[in-house]
Length: 215
Image 1 (tube, rainbow, N blue to C red):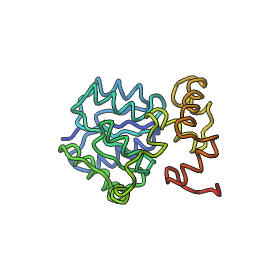
Image 2: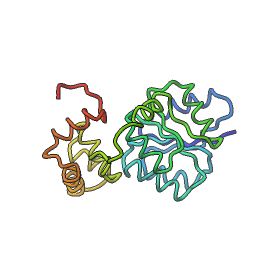
Image 3: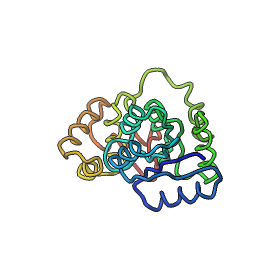
Image 4: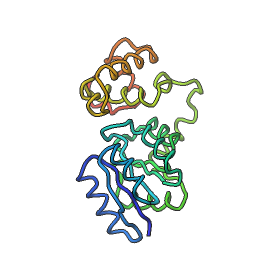
């Protein structure tokens, strides 16, 4: 029996994940968490083989959270389950210590397969994400502007281009507005961008967000 922990700030998502795993043979949901603080408490108190983790919960940046979890529980395998299908998020998650990366649009059978594979010591990435990796093998070696950002700066950058205000970002990351403003300033400086609109245009051009506007 593979023991699985669920960490997502949406109750309906956790309910759905629990239902999928319950209906698949060989899995036991041993515990659940709704933010970064309860996730750390959960992995400290509950033994499990796999953690299914949302990258965008309240509290710590998701990439930083993966690093802390792997520091405290190196044997715990982490499957990132997120709304972000862009390659850059997956790259950072794997570098931080994740063993799998799956988007929330994936079918239930793919979730079961991913948990099964990483529980057995493997690495899982969806076919669509693998194709994105392959397509970018011929990109220039020189780092793009967004690749120069730290994990926290990249998280703030992502939230800005998705339309969140400084206040909203500060609330979700449990930090001060001043701290987020400092991160925003560093993002603009490192990426050599004049303002938020330029960041949004850059993100769309490099397919870091969905182009559903006329920007």
